[in-house]
Image (tube, rainbow, N blue to C red):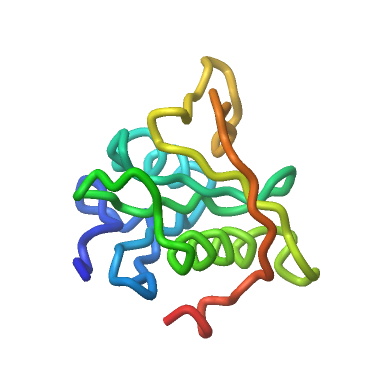
Length: 134
């Protein structure tokens, strides 16, 4: 796992985790960092996650091998991190949107951390906290 994976221009913008099958998972630290993570640091073939209809972190799974899909374990892990770093972290199951980063856009005038999705899927997961994820 690359400890500098969540660094943009010398500044840490994301927490770094490793999925069960060894993929790098990045979790944005703030609304402005979410924009940088999702729109500048992430590659088009990376995978993007965010708790549906809630405030919270953007989560990106790095995909340097350009896999068509994530393993079930990594999909659930990244979604659970997105739920755990959202306003739904205290609840039961949370719906999480996920998409390719190429399908994430930010029209002019949207507030920091707000994006639009051209297409996405939804998974429901139980939130996990940082302590459980490391």
